[in-house]
Image (cartoon, rainbow, N blue to C red; front, side):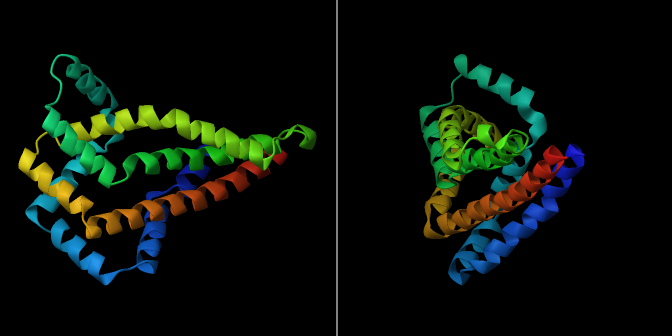
Length: 205
């Protein structure tokens, strides 16, 4: 039951539909035009393909070995700096931290539904718990994201990385990713609320 509920609630089609709806709602012709012009260039397509390949969940063991190699062969400082610029410009770490908090919330409330009312934590208690989770996650998640980014862009030249960072830091790049990140968080929150309701029904039964 849980596997079915997770697949249905967090399906790629459902999440993508929510993100697309948010992008349409917040549509800005200037941002869209400039973003598409860049993303359709050879560099834009190349970086996108690198990100898709580097985002595969099957890479965990590869990434672990890749990170271990930094002890003897650390990445050049200039390259590290530009990759950090890319990660920051895309606002990946705060979005990732908030995503985990959103996905944790229905589990907390589902557990609440199975306990006597007198023992249930308050909304303030849950908020405090989630804030603590965010703080604990930030540093390890930032490290993991940086390693994944360094791996994903490993075949890109320094010039390509610099030009990509410049686009991401531009008004169009910031506008595009702000809308995409917010759309994804809203989609996750909607799906999370749906799953929390289903959890509650099962625990009550």
